[in-house]
Length: 145
Image (cartoon, rainbow, N blue to C red):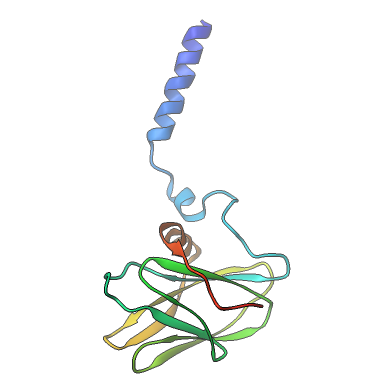
């Protein structure tokens, strides 16, 4: 009887490992997804896939460079609660997003090309933001709070 119970548990364990994760798990994962530090907000700026020869899109905050993103990369900024002026630069124009963050929140912005020569920043849902962060590679930023 114990051998049968052990074999049944083993079979159930193996079948559970072969199933794909639920949509909820793919979006939110476990509680181990990095959230905001105490008294700060976490802002993830992500870029989806891009052709290998696509140029980096530079990002600035309040006229100071923060960094640049190529395909499938992301950066995280830990921000004190304040309003911020973020810009994504193309070769001819920039797109501006003004945000206000509060302690404890986690937000996601997508940077992407807009047309041939411009770039834009748009909001992402928690689900899409976390999916892109998990699929991408973190890059450093010049931001130092």
